[in-house]
Image (cartoon, rainbow over all chains, first blue to last red; front, side, top):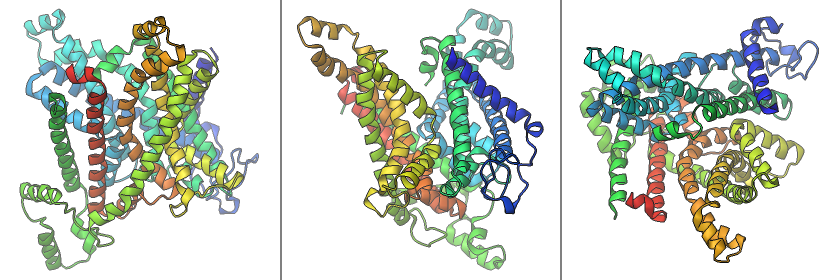
Length: 271
Length: 306
């Protein structure tokens, strides 16, 4: 299976270079050297230097680290919020459910990146607003999935039995409903990681996400676009990194979804 | 008008209202005072109070909300803090450019996806199938902010055939269209291939073949028509993603559309323009989604009667 090997290789390299970035690179991602601007690869700087003379390899590794952190944090927040709201709404039904459905319909009707741009425009830029904006756009899908699961699970005998023996809402949600849909939510999150990474890179490319001097692949690409003629490697290297990692995450998500839910039924139902 | 269409339109209204309300409250919840942005930090308190009154910011929130909805209903979106021109005029200048770009990208995507997807579905495992797979898998992961610079490198550095930025020359739209349309084509190829592959094995196709139709005719007249139904939905629903994706494409190619306008406005904290542009984006997306639903019901009677 050469494709699986390639996927694991890319993701492994991404994780390793992100987690071990301080050990792997000799330069700081922020140290300027204006005498060595826009240089090509050299023994001193294996991937060259950018417009301010910073080491591209260091920025690439630390940029991957930032992306990894942003994707993990956003997915975690989105999963928590989405599954909590979705499970409660599906279980309680009634006006609470109708309200949630209307809210998620409104949010789904708006393209995710537009919602994120709107939030960042008003809340401000930087790491924390970016994570908030990304999780605000991503939670809706998980809420819909969790809701559709809860709607079918609430009629099950073990849930009814627990209710009859006096269990409160938190116990029903966290002991009975959540464990039964956690697997599917996790698969959905794996499939969604690529789009969160793309959104992070896109927003940083627009200058609304990660702010310099903190490195991010999107911001590196944006700088690279200004120097396409003099130093094309400034755009090509972070671009290739985004492409490879997104491809690997997409492929991983597809394979996980295919083995967990071969007919794609549960996820199609929720959306 | 059928009940289905009526139900879709009735759902459109609360959705649009929800969006308007969301934008209103985001606008009010932002940190920083719009009066301070307009007058600067050192303005006299009397001048501030006057400005606050002129903008209606001293009224209760519910009253402000009422004025906001009434203003939208009559097309008054306020004035740009940066240029002083009405927001509606700013939007009217930029929006057609974005719409041009979005329509060209959508057209390009369909022109690539339908022939390639059907060719792949006709001979599973064949050469076209392999091409379609490679194209959709690569294009799906290739963001426009990487494809754009690649196109610029190819067409400005290697083969200087096409203008790479602005919108003044006739060929200017070609590269932004490619950057926006190719990732969409990758998605559509996948849909066309799956859907055409499923339809060719249906009984009505076999019945057509049994009646003596040539394979080519049976495929084109019977299978293909049904296979393209889901493509209409996906293409319609993706139009919103194309329009908002144009924000990134416009930045790369310096295309003077709605995306460039909204980015400039965000940088300059020009909130009336941000609000107007977001509303216009959202209203367009919702309208196209509604149109797609209605069109789908029109071409597929099963949806209407379900």
